[in-house]
Image 1 (cartoon, rainbow, N blue to C red):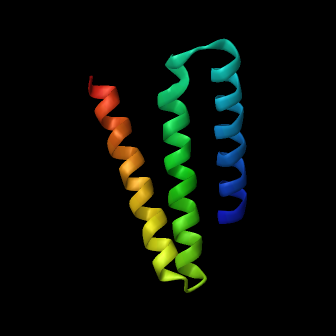
Image 2: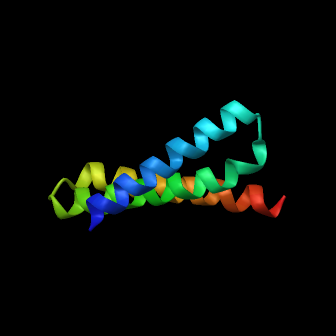
Amino acid sequence: MLKVMRIVSGIIVFALGIYGLTTDNNAILPFMMFFLGIMSLVMGISELYKKRKSIGFVSIIAAAFVFLVLIRDLLR
């Protein structure tokens, strides 16, 4: 389940990135940041399940940072 979520969110981030680059549309960036945060969070949880705690915690902290930046940008 986690692997499927990671792959799906990665594809969504990739597709949104390609769309944003080709159309020069910056309104899509919050959605891309949201799915990037989801992907990092899922990767962190899956690493914790594999008993790789240091990599898992770093991924979860990176996801938290992405969500904080997303919230800050949405409140602007």
